[in-house]
Image 1 (cartoon, rainbow, N blue to C red):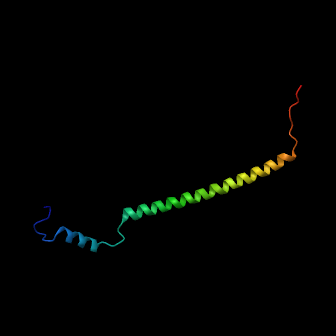
Image 2: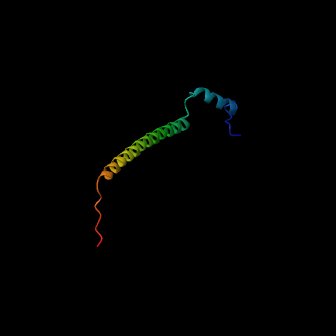
Image 3: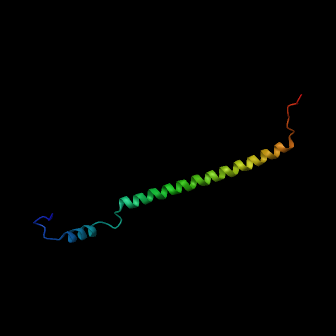
Amino acid sequence: LGRRAEDPRSTLEIVKEKEADSPETTHPVAVNSFDKLTRIHTQIHKQLEKQELLIAQLLQDDEGVNEMLKFRPVARPRRE
């Protein structure tokens, strides 16, 4: 139906020939998407690690502050 009269090859033959001519690594969309997802996953993983370290540091600092406050007398307003 859509074949040219001067090309006696079948559509399947043409497709197979084009596949043979192109290298195996020509998957720009799939590979590019996978690379982007991998990069984003790595960035998220690094950000989560930094957040965990920051939370641990904040908790440690908070414990230190609480320990210091235990030894300080708290000034309370006098009731009259």
